[in-house]
Amino acid sequence: MSAHAATAHGHATHEHHDLGFLRTYVFSTDHKMIAKQFLFMGLFMFVIGGLLALLVRWQLAWPETPVPGLAGILTETGGVLEPSQYNMAFTMHATIMVFFVIMPILAGAFGNFCIPLMIGARDMAFPTLNMLSFWTTFTAGLVMLAGFFVPGGHAAAGWTSYAPLSSVVQYTGVNWGQNIWCISLFTMGIGSMMGSINYITTVINMRAPGMSLFRMPLVVWSLFITAILLLLALPVLTSGVAMLLFDRWLGTSWFLPSGGGEPLLWQHLFWYFGHPEVYILILPAMGIASEILPVFSRKPIFGYHAMAFSMIAIAFLSWIVYGHHMFVSGMNPALGMAFMVTTMIIAVPSAIKTFNWLGTLWGGRIQFTVPMLNALAFVSMFVIGGLSGIFMASTPVDIYIQDTYFIVAHIHYVVFGGSIFGAFAAIYFWFPKMFGRLTNTALGHLHFWPSFVFFNLTFFPMHIIGVGGQMRRIYNPLQYEFLQHQQHWNVIITIGAIGLGISQIPFIVNFFWSMVAGKPAPLNPWNSTTLEWTAASPPPHLNWGPTLPTVYRGPYEYSVPEESADFSPQTQPPRAVAGARRH
Image 1 (tube, rainbow, N blue to C red):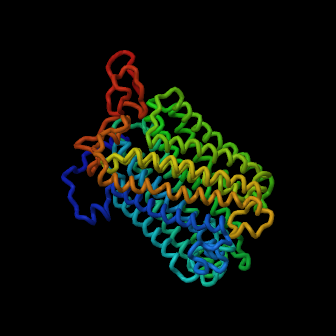
Image 2 (cartoon, helix red, strand yellow):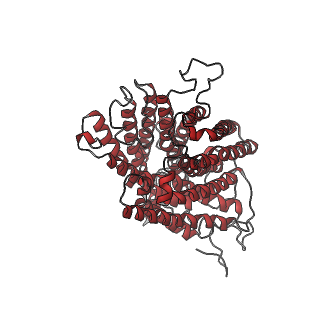
Image 3 (spheres, helix red, strand yellow):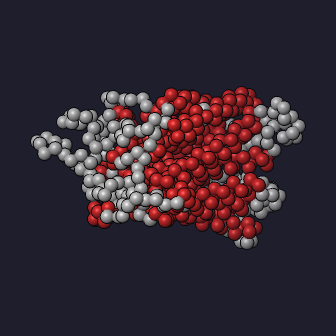
């Protein structure tokens, strides 16, 4: 059925495509331009979210020390932030990074760019819906940024916005920021659901002739599964934020105990979305790593089917582990035990993927290119984050470390060390195909190595101060006598964070300089086997010529004994000789 659909799609008009500026670069329905729009939006918000993180870290390192040259200007305490500003800064840092950086870059940009090109389609199934998906998400981002300029300041109840703190209208004066937070995430949810419908329909119906499900690259598998998770999880969040907004605006009492509401209902709604969201953030990066490691090991992926089925298992199990976020909420111990066991079980498919990545590397001719370095960083940092997650799966351990900086360390190793290094790997890997030019290798190394070192300097000590008792979301650690002896770690962490921020400058320079002045990219600079490398660089409108490519083999045929080159593209027919490799 997919072959017929793809063939029919192949008869789409392929005339010279000349639209005006607005339809080409702004309100485009071309999946490649929409991918670039998501990418630019995500990178811009990355800068905003990073600056907010540096404000938070400066406050924690030097909470009572005036900023040189600014003494008496910023705050009465001498720090850079007042307590209410501090609450706003960490709330918006996390919200922006999760919803407006990682999701737009990994799911939005590379979902849009990779899926049609890697399955041999001319575009997404619903191009206009695809355009609306971006502009809805972009509008949500503008609304979120507008919250910084409203009376009372932006949302300041944490990125989880637990009720009843978030549902009381005037917890910090006249606060429109929390309302804007709800409106923005509601809008973002609608935009993401539009994209999910498009991804799922495209993968099911528009694969090129010969592109069976188990000939799809693993990054397409990961994005397909992510789209299913998004389609199922986001309605829960959008419903929850609508109910929260009604409590604040219309006088309902979904979460307000004074009106008969239940604050824990918000936690159930938020985390029923929130834990699948963790895998929405990490699954695309897993697919990206699974794509890059074989290319630069010059080996087939180890255990293709196991990798695909492990992602399916992760998606299924992600729905029955969310309660581990609520071990300290007064949960029935028997129910807590069930969530503890399922949380430990979900580590199994993640471990399968990790060992298969190691199996892919074992004995390979590894090339330490910039994409490969970032992919290896993803694997190693994800392992550290995953191992710390096993600690928290145990209810007695979690009760002790819940709401400490151990949790902050864990989530950053998974989401920054995992998803962001995965995003960097994807940008460096597909940049030649996306923009038709090569990035600068020296600047790539200058970006990667300091980022890797400063990342670990920033986030690994958080495990130490977390076990030492430092709570999350405190404004001044020096107010607590039992924390004062480890304040030097806060200083070290902040120095690492500043270094991590500075380390992104070579990336910004490399990205924009290479767009306009980089060396023209060859058709297939990495000698990769997948379909996108058979299209022009950058691909034209509708991606392919008069006929769609035909797929004859799997996506990771490297070091093929009977081939003169060390790889066999998916479009290369099998040889009609005895012993030829066929799929």
